[in-house]
Length: 189
Length: 148
Image 1 (tube, rainbow over the protein chains, first blue to last red):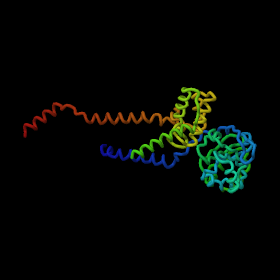
Image 2: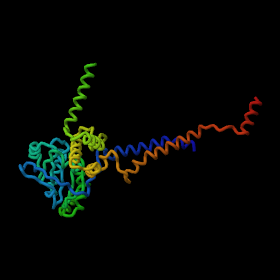
Image 3: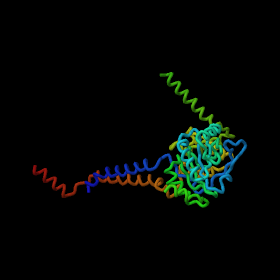
Image 4: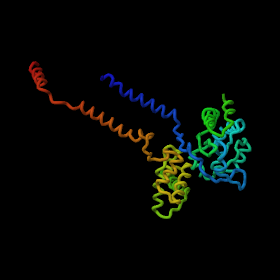
């Protein structure tokens, strides 16, 4: 009995080590659980990038499944994921809407000209108010919004082929009004 | 040395002035200003892991302070302002987390740890107490002394 007690501190240390190791490695402490899954996409009224005088709102998203991507030219990860967004737009036909977040519109237009434009349109969120309504705390962030305007999925960080295959494509497959999904999943398999 | 100290104090003071000037809000009265100050210390900056939106200079903290300010102007109650941020950023933004199943461990762990501590203290204390020798022990001690 006393012999066992001697090993107790070692045991406690072991348990703590395992718990803390898992806590610090399995889960990125910078990732917050999203509070908006299953909630309607917030209302907004913002200028459309590169189209003087035009504005867009939540109605502009309805009727089709959309991938809504929050990006900026000052964000290096946005450039890193840009190729994947281009691929998704070209190969799957999924509608991608951009939110140009706290950026210089002129730089943004130039950026799209230089790197390609996968977006159906971009809205300019200069002040970051739509960002706050979306619970955005850094760019890039990406939302999958169903045809009824409900947020189904949120990704904080870059969209890459693994995220597409493991998270976005399967979520997409479960959404009504997404006919091209068989083709999409077929490509992946 | 004195010069270094003086210039660092200057930097600090100027830095603080700069920080308050960023928001540049004018409050109608001291009470509203105090309410604003109290509210913004209640929310955690989502980007900075452990800093309130009051103390953080991160752009998102500036946005959230502006949001709090706007809601106050719209006449929202404290509870409504908390709800507003919580529905968008989750429990994470609240420094005072809600009591629900996913946070039970958080709330109960101090009590559990206190119970463990009390248990350990009681065990140690019991082992330390020396009980008075029994009659048989006295007798044996006496015999040992006599024998030597």
